[in-house]
Image (cartoon, rainbow, N blue to C red; front, side, top):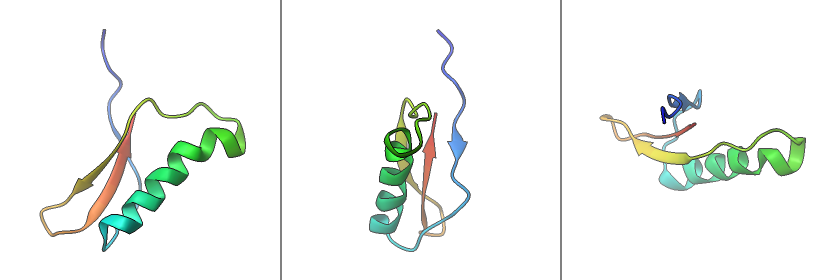
Length: 56
């Protein structure tokens, strides 16, 4: 089975907590808007020390 590619959220955050809150918003999108929830959501850290989220 081929897994879908990652979609990167269009923002980077100074703290892991801020990125975590954004990830919770992405996961909660289905409950709020009735859209299909992402299969997997991950936090990642850039080489410059900022945090982001990606999902598929």
